[in-house]
Length: 255
Image (cartoon, rainbow, N blue to C red; front, side):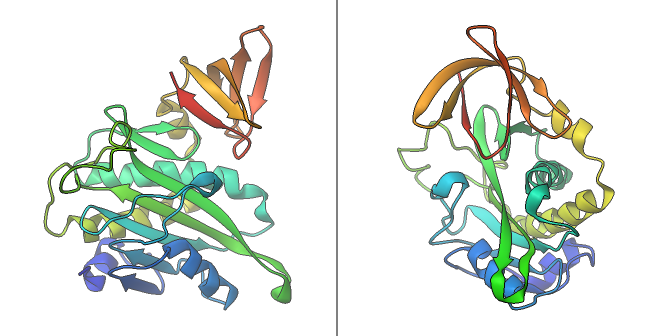
């Protein structure tokens, strides 16, 4: 069972309302409902496991008990939903900072929202806009974070065992609460600072590499040239044509 007071302590007073569960369908789905009901900014939902965790493009996210931490945090930015892509990038930097402060090796970021260690995915981040037509439209942004802290007993399921890894390997008492609180603290901090682009760019693991550009049911080999200031990728196709690739349009597979 997660200790709510330890999470609050690790968050350093940054978090507002927080709800903690042993298990939940999805922390983000639950928090989106709270947001529509008027929950204040920086409301957090934390769980030790999820039965319906999800990632980008509707994919499921492996969220078993005893191996990770799963949380969502509400932001109510001024303006509209156009900032979600940049918030995803900022969140990736914040999660890196939080985990590394607990002793993790330096983490890499696979554009746009996955954290990698030793060639394997250890964390997924998903930013979702919240809308409520009855209250006037855009309500805010929910940042969802799922981290594989420890190796599951018996290993990861066969379908992801070659791509999924853990940050710390063996289970350590109290680390889940420290990670949850630290992530909340750093997410709020990086959003407040707004100065994350240089760190996000430095940690990119795709730049200078070949990858498969997957979109619209097709795949094409491309070379990743760099990251633009709006967090889009600049890529070169095999015919020499260059293009800016926007988040949400594609999935990039490392070759």
